[in-house]
Length: 185
Image (cartoon, rainbow, N blue to C red; front, side, top):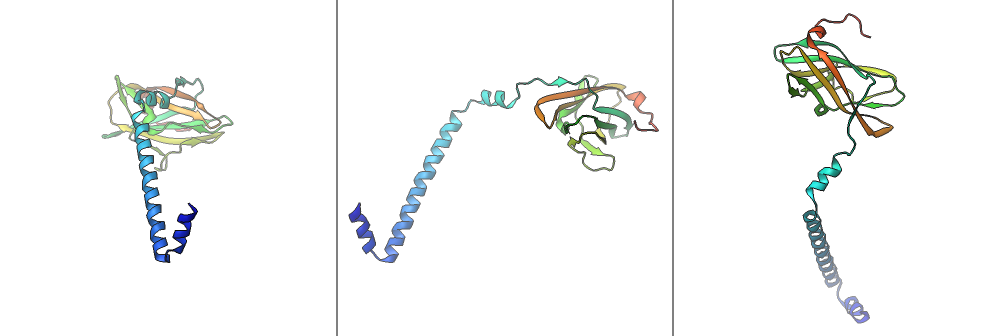
């Protein structure tokens, strides 16, 4: 090994640089190919059913007895149904509310997801309700002629305990909600 180093030291600068770059490229190719083959074998050894089981939480969603969301009124338009709601967080923790795909309206045996969730100013509704605050919003659904339904806010949790996921169901009488309330809470 010492003789090899001495031979390299006696070479010209250009030759030493060429040997250095050639060695670095060969070692890089070897390391990349080892990484790719190892990655391929890891992918082949994955069991898709176990991935699905581990990503889906083992905890079953519980329905809460505490009322966080309340429905104020509805507005039926020709192409949409607007549900005016509010979230009231009376706890000392931050409430993470449902994302758009986790909100469902069951009407006549059909499950409908909202197309939008906005605040009363037309902006995107907040995802976190701070402690001791109330936020007002609008859920926009496709138009329907139903008289009643069930609105479910699923996948809600508190900031300090994110593993305890819960849901809230609201039974809606759409005919009663068509009359506008003059006062909020």
